[in-house]
Length: 134
Image 1: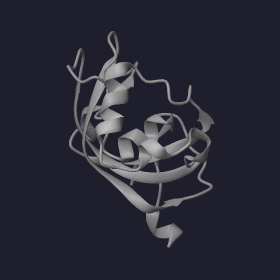
Image 2: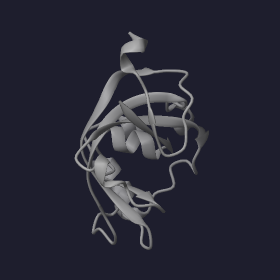
Image 3: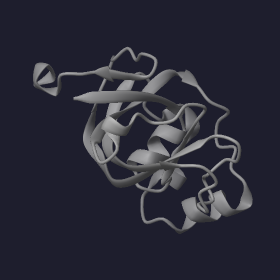
Image 4: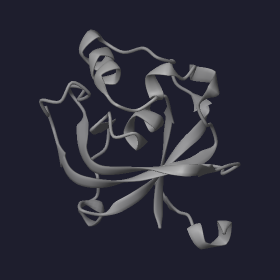
């Protein structure tokens, strides 16, 4: 199955179904539109819980327990869930969409009960065999 690496906390926000956009400088290849991909939380850390007011409100209003987890307690270097890439557009109205880049529209997020730990990520899309982890 194809996977994509995303820095925390964005990876967890996506896997929990809170963040509905992944922002990239490159357009999602058409062959991945409509496809489910694995979410890999990279080992590299993002900027922590740096959210604007609207994003913070979305997190606080969501039913997940993610809002009560400390940044350093998030999984790093792990496959944590999956999501369907529904579309790839510019200037999406979502509070998660950044301007002047490609907004990958995400839906049907699934958070795994147990993350697959100690997985090294890669750039762009890459293959990961879930069967080998069982």
